[in-house]
Image (cartoon, rainbow, N blue to C red; front, top):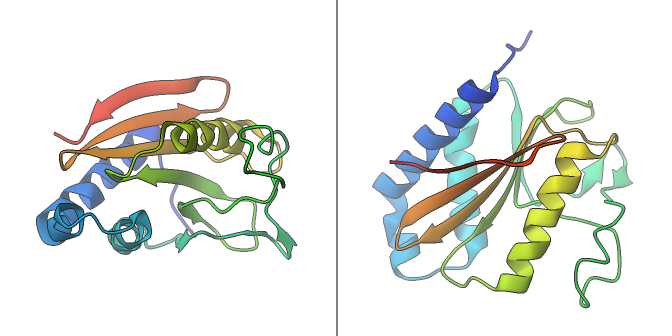
Length: 163
């Protein structure tokens, strides 16, 4: 049986994973690799923090259906479908036990893309089909991640830094 994580537990575990990322994988940010590479390494560290959950990258399924968010295709001109691929999720595969959804941006920050990621987090934490306990937007600026947390009915609940 898995344990219940409080919001504070989740935030502390994410901060620990981010500190590990910055300790062992800072090079990825220094050479400006694609955000998927950074997401992958962060997901590895998150898996250690949440051993009783699955940590997946760009997971596009809800059971056997494609993951869709109503209202996301209006987010930008490029998005023509409601299909979404969150950067990182902490969940139980095949169950409606969605703990955390993360969108991440490295130094290649595009403001339009950032707005869409934030909209995704608002929808993922409030949509009845998903109801992620928390959403998190991570923006790496000068190797110091800025964290913006989201929760159902609260939208942005906390701006915070790892240090």
